[in-house]
Every structure is written in structure tokens, then in C-alpha cells.
Image 1 (cartoon, rainbow, N blue to C red):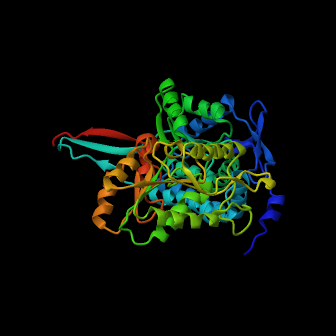
Image 2: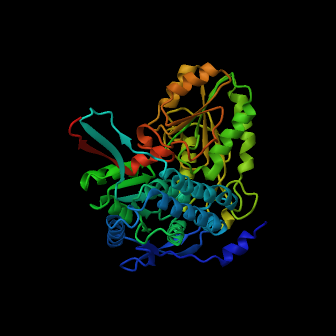
Image 3: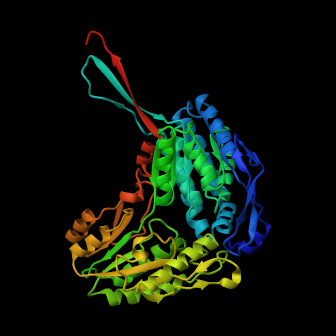
Length: 496
């Protein structure tokens, strides 16, 4: 059914209050900040500007809920049923959540509807299904003893998520943390906070007990810092920049040595070898992956390494793809690329484009602000050639639709250049030779390596990186490692 998204947007209401102890509340001191839509620069609503007092209240609520066992002591099968209902309610509210996500963050509503909402629901439902199928262990001890190894919930989890995929990133934390029996205090980005509080309402409607899931919107240096420093928070799951990830580790050392799991930045490498026999498909894939979500993805394949023998042909194919992603109205049905999250991010991206030109890279496509008359913040899909691996556009995470093409001569050089980065989130190898595909995939230092594709994804596989791309893994059963503690219980058996 066709939806008039502009009409819906005109009627949509927004509630920017925090969610603490099972109800919507203003910040303790009454402070607010403006939530501005990147589509047109207009204020959507005001949002509670939570600070230390609000974080204290949220953590106290979460701790009380955990300590009295209203959620943690429920059987796994009971927690499963609640989380399944939560997932169902997310899907039932699909159009509302998708519209709010688009108005708040800027991505095309077609993708908020078809990707973000279903992925968030799928994540919650998957962990619901998984939790009563994760078994504990018995160690192979001598007959005189019995050693039980059990997974127990940690307690209060602080989840701090970024602005690029607000619902999906929240679900990646909420799914395993809640399924394992923890209580959660979620701090969404101040740039896109609105769907987080709505998710908390839906969870309560689904039967999640009051106090188990709290949301404290606010600025990173206020609410985020207070949460990470809190002495009664047992672990922090953080997704965001490497710069702030360093602070998370510092906050842990300054407080109670809480566990910190960082999912940080990336500068992912996309390697195309001359034996690959379908350059148009490789070009279509890299353009689609790079320009999806306006390039605001930590795993965007922003460094493309192409063998010199095929570089001209490959670059021509990529440049041919770029106009398909020309920014459009995010509320229009056919729009492929929307607005960057705010004016500051647009200025940052345009600054990197200027830096690339100043350092001698060749601007082959895009490079300019688009749709300035809308009042929103749009940048054209941008392709640079003549890039070296030492340029800023090849070293630093841009978080915008900017792709850099770097030429190589040998396989060893390609691997060396790809690994010459402080990041190690994802990579991709394009080769028709199975030996080369395996050899290069093994040599690349990345949490995920794709071969002859880049767009496969599923909740069943772990997501995360090496080096300064972070530690720990989101998604899959491995995410339970972040939100549970192992306990060994020794029992002496007399007469054995």
C-alpha cells in the first residue's frame, strides 16, 4: 500500500521525554535540547537533556529491578515470550518507527521501513528464541568433585549507541542483554534519540517489568559520561567513534573497572584483482555498500584497492553508478540516498572532500552539497581517483558518501596497503581464483572478510573488528559473552 509520508510527517507527534522506571519523565532539572530534522533543518521537538541526576535515577531503577529478580529470575522461556511480544510490537509499529527514524536521522523512509525496523525486530526475536537454548557446562573434573560452569547476567548494563542506525544498534545491545536477564540503561545519541524512548514503551507494553529498560537521552559529555562513570553499572556496550571509545576505557579505569565492549570505527578495504570476471557487479556492489545510509556506516567500503591493469575500467563503472545515488527527498518512495544527520556532519564531509582535492586526489564524481534549497544537509555521492594510502581521505573515517580508489601492482602490495590502517572492521576480496580468495582473506586483519560480495548480513553471524575498530562482538550467540559472567561452582562428592 502506498503511503503519503509527507502527510504522515505533518501529523506525527514526538515525545522527547526520558523513560525511567517504566514511565516518561522530564529531566530532573527540566533542561531540554532541540531535536532538529536533517531533512529541512526544522525543530521536530524538544528532548529531555539528561544529566548525572537522571542517570542516577535510571541506574537505581535498573538496579532495583535486577536485585529483586522481577526479570533476572524469570525462567528463560518466560523471558523469551516477553521478548517475542516486544519484537511483534516493533513490527506492528513499523510505519510510525520508520517515519520517526527518517525524520530524526535523515535516511530514506523506504529503507527505514524495509531494513531498520525489520532488522531491529529480528534481532530481539532471535535472542528471545536463543536464550532457552544456551546450555551451561560441567567440567571434566575428577570423580571426587563436580564443577558446574554457569552463565549469569551481569546486572546493570549501560548501552551507548550512535546516530547512524538508532534502532538497529539499540537492538544489538538490548537483545542479548535483556535475554540474559540484565537490566539496561540506554543512552541514545543526541542526534537521533527519538525511537529509543518509543522502543522502551513498546517493551513495557509487551510485558517487560518496569525498571528493566530505561532510556536517558542527552549529550555524550553529560549523560554518556555519567553512565560510563557510574559505580553501579556493571558493563558498558558502546558503539561509536574510536575517539570516544578510548574515553570509555578511561571511564572504566576511573570508576569500578566495569567491563567495556567497544564497537568503533572502520576504514574498510575492498580489493579487486584482475582475475575477477565481472567488474560491473563489483562496481555496483561497492557503490551500493558505500552510498547506503549516506555513507554513514562504520563498515562502509571506503578504500577501494584495484589492480592497475583493470583500474581504468573499474573506475569507469563506479563513476557510472554514482548518479543512481543522487540525494533526494527521504520521504519520497524512490529515493536511494537521504540527508546527513546534521549540519556539522555535512561540513565535516565537505571538509574531507576539500582535503582530498588539496592533497592531489582527482575528484571523479560528486563532491558538492546537494538540495541546499530544502534547508537540509545533503552531499552528493563522491568518488576520488589518484588516491594514495597516506591521504587523509584514505586514513580517517569520514562517515559520509566518499569513496577513494587506490591502485596496486601485486597481491602482496594490496594486502600490505589494506592492512596499513589503524582500523580492522571489515574487508572484501574479489577474485575468481579460490586459492587467492582464501589466501588474501586469511592475510587481511579484519573482523569480517567478504569474498566476491559485500552485502550479506545476518543476525546469526558476529559483527566487530580488530585493532582500533574495537573489541567483543555484537550479534550471534557470541554477544552473550558481553552480557554474562561465568561462574564455577565446585561440589565435593564424598566416597567417589
